[in-house]
Length: 196
Image 1 (cartoon, rainbow, N blue to C red):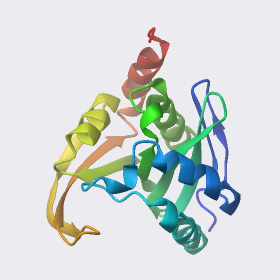
Image 2: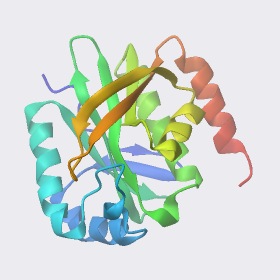
Image 3: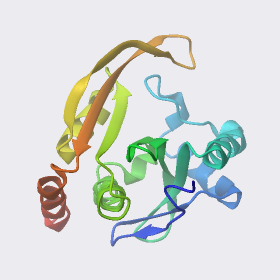
Image 4: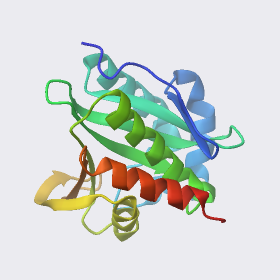
């Protein structure tokens, strides 16, 4: 089953297109913007590891468990990556994750636009019953961003996974359900319409 199918999603502040090996050089430049691979609480590929990360994500796509996207800003510049992951076609659930964004594009309308595009596609086209978000329990910036979307905390998975440096990560799990989507959509549209 090819679910979810390949798609390009576009909005005024961002667009998401299927990840491709040709995006490598621009993704390396984006990850250098803020030296993101040095963050201890998340796994962002280094420029040297970018080709392997693209290959890994495309391999998971071929196996049916991930649909990776390259993120472009409103001017068309590549600024990061995101994915639909932990895809469950039977129960129509997925997670939005493995996301990173160049420092210069953070705290702009870009992230809100990306989540608006991904959530609308998940609920309105793919007929998902719920969409999850997961992050390190101590990544307060990511947790606040997820909460601003309107996602609810489902709980914390303690000692859930090993980080690249060897430490154990407690994972905060959030979700938005189909019943909650209309209110979340209205809130995201309000956020995107506000002057910046």
